[in-house]
Amino acid sequence: MTTYAAAKVVAAREIRMKLRDKTFIFSTVFFLLFSIAVTVLPAVFAGGPSSVAVADRATAARLEQSPDLEVRVVADDAAAEKLVRDGDVDAAVVSGPEVIALQDRPGEVARALSTEPPVRLLEPDAVDPFLAYIVPFALAFVFFFTSLLFGLQIAQSVTEEKQTRIVEILVASVPTRALLAGKVAALGLLAFAQVALIAVVTLIGARLAGLDRGVLHLLEPAIGWFVAFFLIGFAMLAALWAGVGALASRPEELNGVSQPVQMAVMLPFFAVIFFGENDLVMRILSYVPFSAPVAMPVRIFNGDAAGWEPFAALLIMAVTAVALLAAGARLYEGSLLRYNGKTSWATAWRARTTA
Image 1 (cartoon, rainbow, N blue to C red):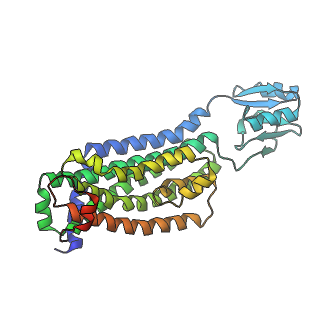
Image 2: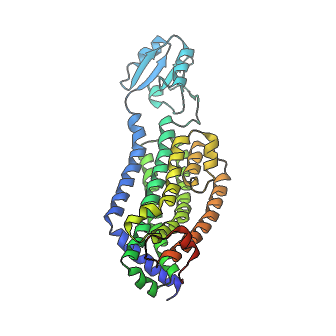
Image 3: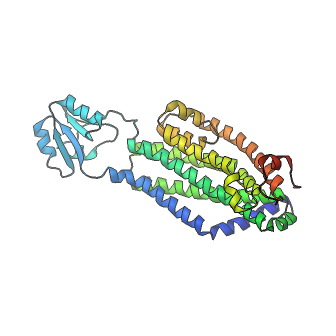
């Protein structure tokens, strides 16, 4: 049996086992519900009557007849526009007449008038504050938990096979690298399928929730790039997870030996959450391989990334992935058949089993 054929057999076995795993099924359902909530919540928070400021009392009386509007009478047009800019009201009707709003067209205000006046948006390219917070959080949350969950499953699978000595039978049957490649390919494929499904459900939910076309125009490329970055990012870490799983002789040792890889997953999550509004930090994070899968899609959503930047960041990640795949394979081969306690990173790096 060739290495490629052996890897396919291992991958098929891993996929069959994972599709029957309740944890995998639960996590998929949970993330789908989470993605639906992310798209529905903005519509929920935007519910209720729209508030409108107006200086002309006759216009105010006309608007008050609509049950969908809360009318606020102000001294003049300047005061009405200021309330819109400050976010205290959703829209204002000024002399002309003209309807002004911050970023979304207030159709209910225009319809409440006898003739629909022109609408002027003060900040048409601005991102809704709620979405500006929830989209980075959602991307970071999905990448963090999916990478951590699938990565730990790879490591646990390797450790359990090593503890039960079944790995000796596997290595006698298939090359070591085929065993590693099959595990990484299987879990990588399932993780990618899960994230792709989440992305599709999110976009469908956003459309059904009636999100503004401008928001969808920003959200769609951000999610598309996130899926691409996730694929490379997971491949970058997967072999390292298998390597640290082989370092441990028992499941109890796994948490200790996997700390470096766990930190590589955790730090980007907290970095994007805490520095999401810092342009300089986010620009740097979008080129750091471990944080780029989250930071670059966030910058794309915010409109801060030039057209060439995602390709450059993805190339850097791909080069890093090749290096880390080789490093993870070396750790895996150097510690897989060592049973006398926990194997150190240095020992595994120096000693390799026959592939």
